[in-house]
Length: 266
Picture 1: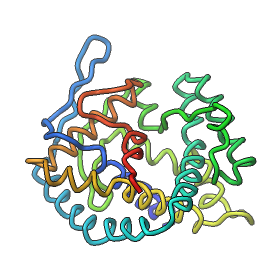
Picture 2: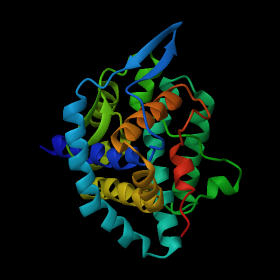
Picture 3: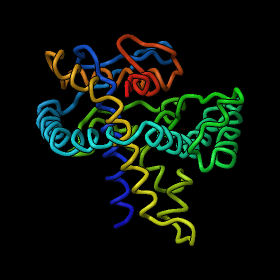
């Protein structure tokens, strides 16, 4: 039961983050070049997906947006410290994926950041590593690793509450629950005297709220200016995943997580 709950929590807040990467109106599919051929990510269940997407929008307006507005009321140092802690925790997933993708240099840098910020930065509250010139690298996950290894994305689909994903990215999320996420292992999978399940779920909830709060204006602008919001989210989600798998700095109409985080004006 705990594992099913954790799957729900993980992908739920992945949905919040995913919703923020949409921009202009999208297309039905995105094509990526691999070994001279073009792979297509198809929207296999578009009619059903659109209905579920509408349901998720209602949840965002009723639950996530109000929570984000309330979070914005906290002083900026508190919010910055929270963001730093969450970013530091993400390294426990990024580092093994750096290694699996052959990014040994990035794995070393992220490992150094994890050690420095967890100690000198007081559990990651302060980004001491950046002060010493050890700047953060882009996050990696198991869905990206599967893509680097040659796995196709499969169909694009939208889950109730959980939001946009693909077959490949869903499998990548499950890998976290079978040993791929050290934070999950020491909080949920194993009974320790130092951490509990509540610590894990709290971190996931805070991650989603923190991200949503940073992009309130961006969400509003997206919804206001998109002729077809569903198509926008779909297209930009696929573009963002394509860019991250291939470590491309920029793709058309796509912003990275860090780009969106810089939109915080508070």
